[in-house]
Length: 532
Picture 1 (cartoon, rainbow, N blue to C red):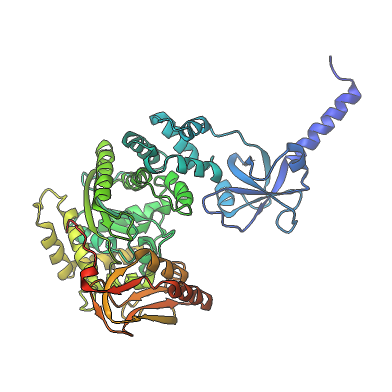
Picture 2: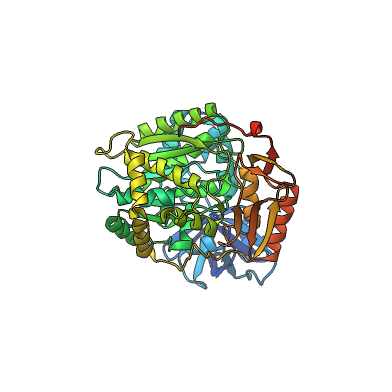
């Protein structure tokens, strides 16, 4: 039965009101929500009442042929968003890619297509290839809220993934973004699983192997919970946020780059998962393997040398744990047709003297320039890793790599290659003889005489971060004593640099609780069995 004319008018009027209510002006809300799309609606917005939205529900926003999903936050302050506006966080605004003030439509979002597979994993079921492809695709497209991401991360933590599931996850993460093809049979890379402050060997390995002619397009991440990542340290010397075309041109001309990987869209689901894993301090073996290998395969690598440090305060604490992790890496790499050489190294203490971007850049440049003051542990470890990578080349015999790498470094060819890469990426003013360090300092000295028997990697990393690193590039820790060294009471152990009084205060408070150094007898220095 058709409605009467007056009823039809009322219905048409209500439909028009609903249509108008669903159209809101876009407002950019300058809040960094880190890898999560967040939308903001005023509580008195007609759309909020009509649609029955609730805080933390998911909404779909459409404009100009684009659409994104976002988690809803409800506000009561018109200074943030007015009743006729929809606010978007920085990430969400950039992803929608329309101008502020543009009219957008908002509606309830459908659940992600993969939510059924997620629930089955939460129930402890084993998932197949298509399940992981569906879940990872939804993660990469930001269809998951932080709550759903956390559920997936927890469900796949520790021993909840068998080795074939880790392979399926890695494969799906590669498929979620761009995969580079350098049109060469040998593309090398070196990676460390992390956890050791100052371990900037990549910035030495890359110019050494590139000077020998190997192709090494090194894309690295920025630090999330550490005092510096490779990209943060390289950014002291040169630009690292390079458009993909520029990055590719540099690699083809110089056989290498040292760039931030965030602009290349390589395994984008990994970046989203990391945003949840790191605050939870979750770094399970399966997730670690999928994260590292997916990034390297997506970057076009054919051969990878992987550094697994072991030590009392490293990510891996024992040789049996390191061997289990090695076997998992080797299984997945083999299934993905990636040639992998795993090296187990000494992770009992920081590598080099500096912890923080400027201090670590100083150490790198001292090694490249063969400065007598250069930290020898950083030099030796970089040479051994570079040697292993050089031995991927069919013309280099096994065991000869170290000597070749040492010759390249000693002759100045590695320095020349590094300077060429820095110039190509856009060099910055940096004098490693007079680095721009934070001017606020305090010194940590030995309370008694003895031998340095333990240096806590985690503690020193935390102190350096509290001092401002890596956001403040000149902040961090300058080390003066290493394991096994004898000290007298009052000897300088390390110096903390900061640029802001508040940062200095936070670092000082952390040092008051524990300096990260233990003094004792020489017999108490822990031994570690490593491969070189």
